[in-house]
Each structure stands twice: as C-alpha cells, then as structure tokens.
Length: 283
Image 1 (tube, rainbow, N blue to C red):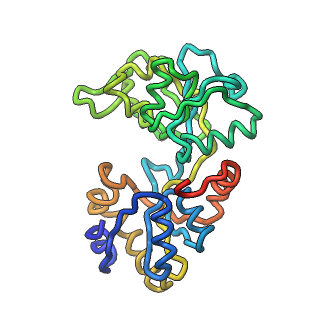
Image 2 (cartoon, one colour):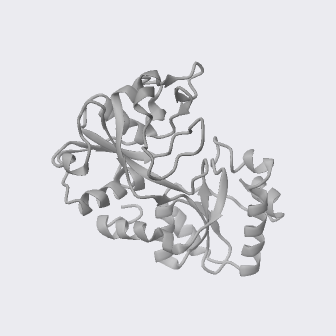
C-alpha cells in the first residue's frame, strides 16, 4: 500500500493495519492532521461522529460505487416478501456486519417484521451454507451484482440469475469462478462454490436492500487542505492507469476498480442504522 500511494502521489506514507473499527477510529482521531484511511462506510460514520473524520472518495467495484444486502432463502421455500419471514429462523454473519445484520435489521424494523430464532454464523459464506443446509429459513449477506455477458446490471433488474440458467450454474474447472452460462455470480453464494457447487440451484435471492455506499478513503479532520488536494488529484489520475490495477485495484488486495467522490450525506442511512441497533465500535 505504501508503495502504491507513493507511486500515485510522490509522497511518503507510513502504513498501519488496525485490527478493528475501534482501533482505526482511535488512530485517526489521535492524529487528525496526518492520517488518512481506507475504511468501510460504517467505520467512517463512527469516526465522523467521534472526531470529524471527513470522507473524500468511495470505492468503485465492477462499475458500482455502492453495494447491497441480500436476503437469501431456499429456492423451493415460496418466500417472496419480508412478511413471509416473520417468526422464521434468521442466519446472519455477526451483529457488526453492515450488509449481513445492520441493514436487514432496519428493513425488518420498517416492515414490522420480527424474525424468530437467530443464528450467528460468523461469516457471509457460513450464512449461505446455513440456508443451503436447512439450518435457517433465511439468511442475510452482502450482494454484488452478477457480471452479465451483455450490458451491466442496473438497479431495478432482478438481482438473481435468470431462471432458465439456474440449472447450468457450476464452478469453473479451476474452481475460481461460479458461472451460469455466460453469467458470473459475485454475491456471497459464490464464496461457497467449492463446498456447495449447486448452491444456486438450492438458494435464491429473495430481495436486496436499498444501496449502501462502498468503502471510503477518508481524512483526519485537521489534514492540511493543500496536501489533501494533492493526494486526491494524484489518486484520481492513478486510478486510470495500469499500475492501479496491479495495486489498489487488484482483486487480491483492495479490489477497488475505480474511485468516485463521496459526500458525507450519502452515509446518513448508515447513521440511522447505528442509532437503531445501538452499535458502538468494540461492543
């Protein structure tokens, strides 16, 4: 990361990798004049509230600067709407997951739906497997749109693979992708393609949530404006080069295929969620 940032800006950076939201927030607030951070939306909201950390950019992945939560159910369940889930067993990654728990909690609250038994699985893939194996009636995980052979997925389109392709879904021979014909699955179900190669045949997406802003690049509240502008301009230019694809854009690294300017107001829904669930970092 330090090399990538220096290549982009010509400046020297000291890189640290905090182990939690709490540690990230503490570090940015303790050094408000010389810290910047690649932090998720939830972390940004908490840091902004704590000491005024300010967002500059949000990540773009496969053409989208937002992501979504998805509600997954057994394909043969007959569940089609939130009210169908009232009293049903809910599998989710953990209570600190934005897409896996917090956003769905807001959706259920607004729809006056109360799930029954709760099953904390520890991860998005484990949540998919809980639904796949029948341990839960439904699950909530992150959603990333499928890659389509023609055109790009857009809001309003079905989030799932077309019905006539479901039977064809399977991992590629090298096991690196989950394909349905020429469609590539990128949501949480793809993460269990080895353990459950027929996951698409068994588990469907019932619905997705309103959009959630992607991860941020944010600055400490007293970061020098001139240096910040230099960094921002350099990163925009760097994001259009091959070197970006080999560093920050690499799928084994950050996986940011691009960046877009972000506004603080885009994170207001996350603030509502934090207030609803009473989340605090480290607790």
